[in-house]
Image (cartoon, rainbow, N blue to C red):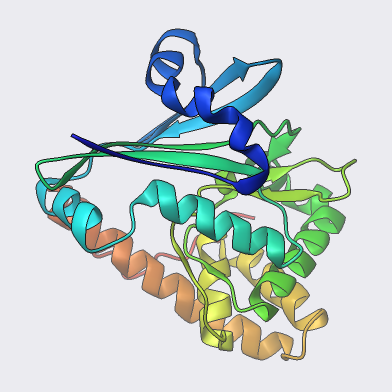
Length: 258
């Protein structure tokens, strides 16, 4: 069994937290999010931390993450630091722990300072027209992210935490899938197209992007439509491969519900 650990430089006093993370997580943690991966809130030495445990990947991924690719916990920390360097917000990275056994990833944890927030983007989009000012501020933040050559591949409503009264209104989580490249308009709109299944809302986002960037709103709309169709094809293929053939190749995915 091989254990790899890392603590950011200004938090080296938390070695005890790292060494006891397994028992603290299992015995004292309060679950705050559970999906494929589980995040728990833990109190240690008078401070609150969020600890994310990554679901054990399949056999080939366990080998790849142990030998060829950086583990998700490590990428989460490194990519979150890049967001902070760009003037964006993510819960303060603390460290990670990766356990390997027989040349495979066995277990991994990513630790951040606990970030208290008011809500995520889900209720904002549920009442889209009532939150246009907040959405416009969000689009300005995304333009800043894109202009800093950061492509967040999991830019979904639940991965954006919102605290309207904070200096940094938007905080980004689930940061292990990012690319750092100069972003074309196609890439920028593909990133945004995952935020809604409602084409009217996507067009509103594209219009705001054009308003606050050097791109025309019409070009933004054209590319966000293409990005949406691409993401729907991807979802349909996944459904088909999982055996859910119902509606697997729907030719009219745009939802005009508003």
